[in-house]
Image (cartoon, rainbow, N blue to C red; front, side, top):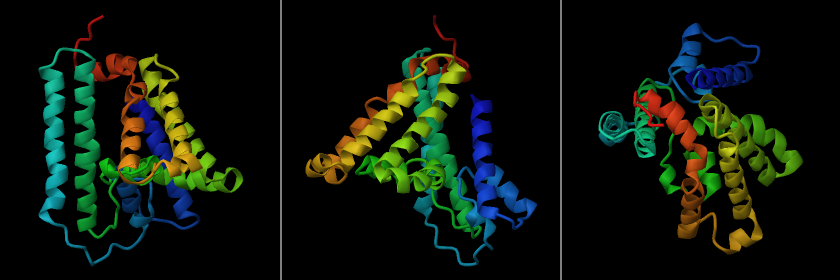
Length: 258
């Protein structure tokens, strides 16, 4: 899993770096910083001269990702040391891992870069506040992928297919990448991750439809409830039992029954 994920990650890094750099050159330090010290997919902040003006970073800005990392580490330890090897332990561990990495370490790393004068945007932007699937996947959840998808899939296809179907293609690409990282290492569960993202794409099309707008989807409380239901309800398709048992639980050094 880590080899496949690393190959995809650094391949996308190289693609975005080449696209932003063009025929110009950048120092080895800037290249190393972008490739190895930041999970985002927009190299432009690293190519600029660091700003001497640093917006004030409050104590709470540090406390929130640090708290996420601590809570996540407790959950991972609970899954690895206390809970019996089961799907429950796997989901508790995965939730903890996401808190440690995406909402913890990545947030702290971004604050460090901001303090150094590099104007990076957070990878996670309070996804629980999303009022639509487009907002959740496009601007709040894992902006590293949404930045990549916007530049290399959405913008090229939108003039030909329209924004709705171009977004649907983004979901298909995301499904294919998750199949590679999740189902291939597990050697099972093929089709479930891409089915999950097809459902996200269909949900986005419904949101944008006339009926969806009349029903109040994409905004307010109804939009938020619809987003949570579509994103969280079928999440077991994305991280299917074969992945939990064959990949994640062994990674926690748990003995999987059966």
